[in-house]
Image (cartoon, rainbow, N blue to C red; front, side, top):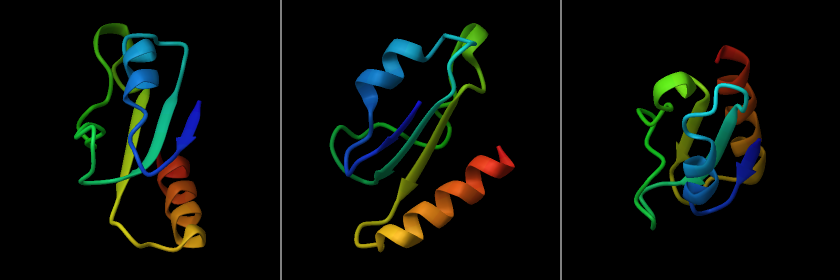
Length: 76
């Protein structure tokens, strides 16, 4: 599941955080409410490694965001 928004998809992350069958990827602005979505939030229990947070600085162009996200996802 891929989310792209100014705010981190914390609710979606919470639902799938321990699920080994769902890869959750969030591209979001940081720092920004809800103050979650750090790169070290990678899942818990059987879901470790299935969460990929890509926090981005405010003001980046959409094309740059997509390029950075694709690169991080490919290397994941």
